[in-house]
Length: 94
Image 1 (cartoon, rainbow, N blue to C red):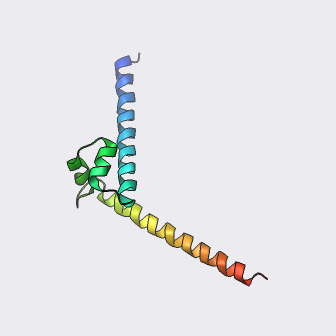
Image 2: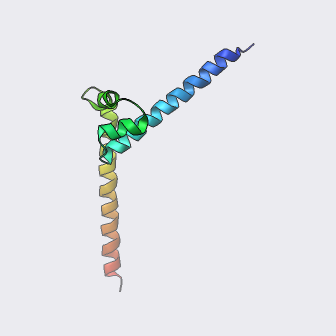
Image 3: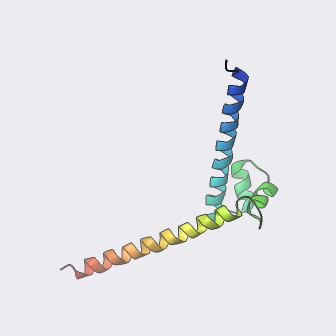
């Protein structure tokens, strides 16, 4: 027989982890867009020290942020390459 209390605890834990991951994603995107730590903290409802700790040298988001930044740079280069190819093709078409 299932225990309703355990089911509730599992659901709450899943929600908490999902919300935690959402906050990390938002923090990474905001930092990439140039928001300052105080703005990120206010938006997420966490302390400034928490946000700073996420992004410091050994922080939980440091490597995730670097990976995100690398991906964004690659995507931007791919878009520029596609735009350049389209422009060259358009110029060759009479």
